[in-house]
Length: 221
Image 1 (tube, rainbow, N blue to C red):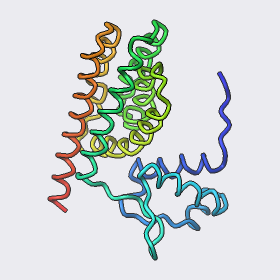
Image 2: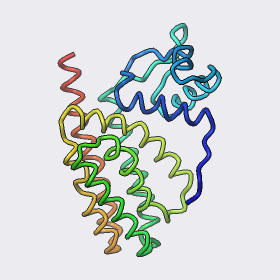
Image 3: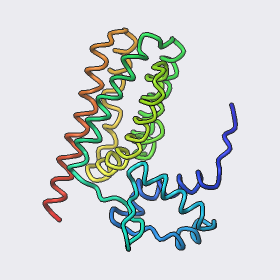
Image 4: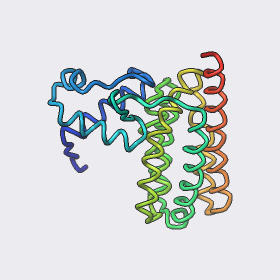
């Protein structure tokens, strides 16, 4: 296994991103560079660079005379983020599905088994983040569409925040892997049109659940 060497900025990006995704830093909270630098034991330079990267991911915004804040969760944004995901991920799957090997399917199944174990243990971080992303990425891995993959990765980092919020609010972590086995089976069958349609439905269904919860929360605010 190759060892991944991460820069100080990458480590700061991951630390701040996890604070936002986990809710330690809430929507609208100010992100003060001096305080973050002290907490993470780094200079302000990697913190500034990290916040700019997270702005590109849609997790942070900069406002004049206010500085950086964690972006607000918005029901209006959910439609755009998840509908773009549905379109782009189906496109990746369409170009990848007929090139997937038995080894790819075996690795995807192993990731799905881990995902189900994490869900059973109530681990929202793994079920909405790392394992979920790796499972889907494996199915798209033969697409040879690097620009589309980059866009999908950015959208996934933003939508993970909504997915994790939904799981924590609704207590639905045990349902997180629903549909993944069926998607994998459709990919194994080589039925591209059915697999892509199922994937789009899977993403849009998640969007509808998350949007309904956000609208309820906004109504109670």
